[in-house]
Length: 439
Image (tube, rainbow, N blue to C red; front, side, top):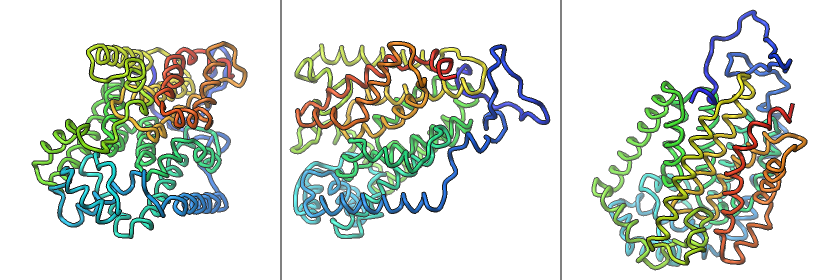
C-alpha cells in the first residue's frame, strides 16, 4: 500500500526542490523531513483564540447543563454515572447484572432506564465526574465532551489549513455532536482518539496511531473495522507498528477489566450483550441506526430473517472491498498528492466503519465530522464534474441540521445512511480529479 501512505525519506539537505514535468510547485512537507512554512501551517493560535474557545466551552456546556441537568430522563448519562459508582463501590463483578444496574439507577438517578452496555474498562473513565452529584457531574461531563471536540479540532489543523477555533465552532453546530453532549455520551471522546490516530499515521508514527485506536475499543464495533482496514493496507513496517500499538493497549484494557470485574467478565459481558434485546429499555433501535443494518431494517421490517442477514453481509463485504481498493489505488508522486490520497482514503475508512457497524446511535455520527472536513478540503474550488458537485451537495446535506432533525422527528434516522452511503461510493471517484482541478 505504498501508493498512498507518505513514506519517510531522508531529509533534503541543501538540495533544491525539483519541479515536475507539469511545472507544479513542490511544497515543503513534514513527511519529507522539512518543516512546513508559516503560510501552510494551521497549528498556530493566539492566547485570544484560546480564551475565546474556553469561553465558548463554558457557555455551551452551561446552556446544555442548565437545560438538561434538572431532568435527565431520556438521556444516557445516568447509565455511565451509575456504572462508575458501581465500580467505585467495589461492585464491578455485578456490572453486567441488569437488576444490580437498575438498583443503582434507582438509588442515584431516581429513575430506571437503559443499561450500561459498554466494556468494563470504560466505567472508570466516568469516575472523573461520578464523585459529584448527578446534575453537576452531567455539567462537568458536558464540558469535557466539548473539550474532546476542541482537541480534535486542534489536531486537525495539521491536515486542514483552517483556523481551529473556527473549526471547533462549526463542529458544535453538527446535530450528532449536540446529541452526544445532550445524551452525555462518549462519541466525541472516540472522535478525538480517531483524529489523534489519523494525524499520527499521517506523520508516519504507526505505533502511536495503533495506541490511539486501541484506546477507542470502548466502541469496538466502530474501531475494529477501522483497524482492520488500516492493518491490511499499510506498508509492512507500518503494519507491524500499528498492530503492536493496538494489541498493547487492547491487552492493557483487558487486564484493567479483569482487575475491576474479575476474570469472569470475559464470559459475562458477551452473554449480557447476546441477551440484551430481552431486557426492558435495551436501547437497541435498528430504525435509528444510520448504517446498513438500519437501512435493511427499513427495507425488510425485521432484522433476524435470512434475507436480512444475507443483504447485510453482501453490503458489508462490498463496502470492505471498495475501501481496500481505495487505499490501493495508485496516486501521483508529489507529496501533496500522496497526502490528499491518504486523507480521502482515511475518510472513506471512517464512512465504511459507520456503515458496517452492527450497533450505531445518532450521536455516533459525530465521527462523520472527520470525513466531512477531509472530503470538503480536498474538493476543487470549481467543481468540474457531476460527481464533484454531488459530493459538495452531500457534504452540505450531512452537515446542516435539516436532514437530521427531519429524520429524528420521523422516527427513521436510518435514512441518514443514504447520503452517507452515496458519499462513500463517490468520494473515491473524485480523487483523481480533485488535485488537478484545485491547482
